[in-house]
Length: 497
Ligand code: NAD
Image (cartoon, rainbow, N blue to C red; front, side, top):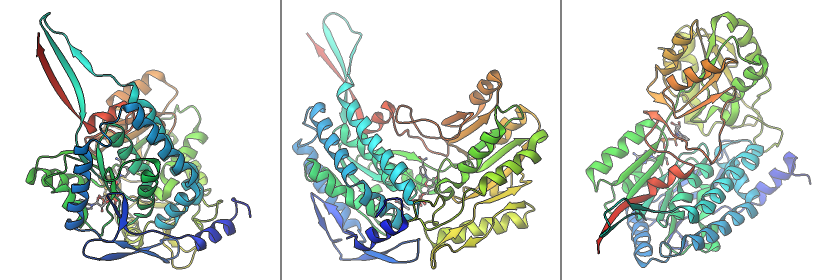
């Protein structure tokens, strides 16, 4: 049966055995209190597996295992070149189990199987391999000092890292954290979202098989905020790294202050402006990119291009082109390799997105496209890609992160006005600029308060550059060598001769 057929993936899904237990100290185990929660597929409402609902006793067990492994030096004591080899083994195993991991991702959170295979698994592999390859090429420093002493500046692993991740790219977000955390010698406790815990749980056994010592990599699934809060308040967690909403990110700083002042690094929400000037080099290409920027992954992307700022003189023409491009993006069965828009992660998220659509209608937005829930698969949660024209930037639809396939079109007349609208947001994650004028591109890129700026493209970049936000989009950076600084403490050692 061909991998490019729905039947192939459906049959594979039927035969799949799914693990739902926590992973602590090198083995799967039930939550200490024996509690579980139901993992439901948004594709068709099917019950997938019961997942361990970890609580503070499980956090304690995992932290003890992680701390012991760290103190014993089983992992951090290895030469970086040795850790590199193990992480490369780990990546190879992820690749070998790529189809199973992709299927788990699609069943669990509803994204199209072709994205899981070609985007998520590939992104996870690239993160693991790039990071592993870097770790034995980073040097410490010698301070400029007098003849009779030596000043050494060294980087040491922080100890126990808790990583709390969201549901939209479960495996990739996990790898962006755990790859540099492990590469630098730390012990890790990964806390996946209750909406998508399955690939993280699978990953744990592969880590052990690859040679990562027991206790060094643990996975604690849980329901609601319980286990995340227990880790964030834990006095023996040294660093907390987080990707998720701005509201939860803010709460984590409070928990750190209430406990041991653990380091907190956050990657949070976005409301990214995509600015199209009348002198864009290719309006058709810009329109296709604008459609993809809101439809890819059902709009459940922190960097979704959810605010489309268009120069007034081309607005009518450009909105027509975007509407045409959006027709190419249609919800379908996520297990069908032809599908490019999958299911919304769950019913509550579907209701939330539909609520924003109703609100925009009542506040005067002109609905140009979509706006409804649809049912390509019975009992699943799907929404048509939706576009509103005539949106004012102060409206809720333009200020709040919807995290669904809903695009707001806002017009502007001058470059200064475009910059002001783009920056009028509590977020500052990403932004796009479309222009043929090099000076204008530089001017606007410099003026935008955003962690990533893309010129004449959307969603550019790879592992070689840092990714993170300005303002309330967070304070940390994932990817690139910059990510390593979150996982190390800097020590100055002065030796008098
Ligand atoms: P969320 O904030 O609701 O949850 C994120 C994680 O935090 C989950 O694992 C959740 O269980 C946990 N959590 C919830 N409450 C907690 C608490 N009180 N204490 C500790 N942990 C808690 O976010 P989400 O809905 O899973 O994901 C969507 C959000 O993630 C969006 O805002 C999106 O922009 C953001 N995101 C950001 C990036 C980035 O790199 N900046 C990337 C992907 C997603």
